[in-house]
Length: 108
Image: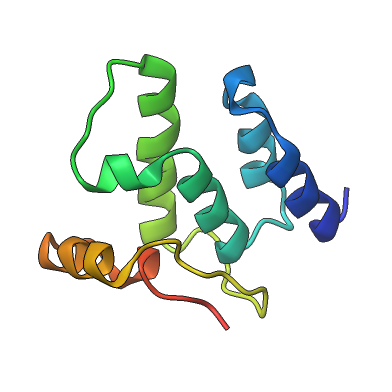
């Protein structure tokens, strides 16, 4: 699967099927920061950043390591675009809460 196919498959993915498929995308050597951030957003990373902690063990086991991997720079920054899906108010509140800019900044 090439990068474009990975992006397309992610957008078509039914998240009710769990986190196995998104994890395979994250484990793929082609996965970059843009794709990792998209996966984070689609997996309800916003709730994680504002402090919501669901009692869903599977979600927690997926979202926490992904957040930490993004912070650690595991995924390379490429020329692939990413637009943070947050309003100006949400971005301001997240910045005020200490959320790192990597989650809030668009990639060209």
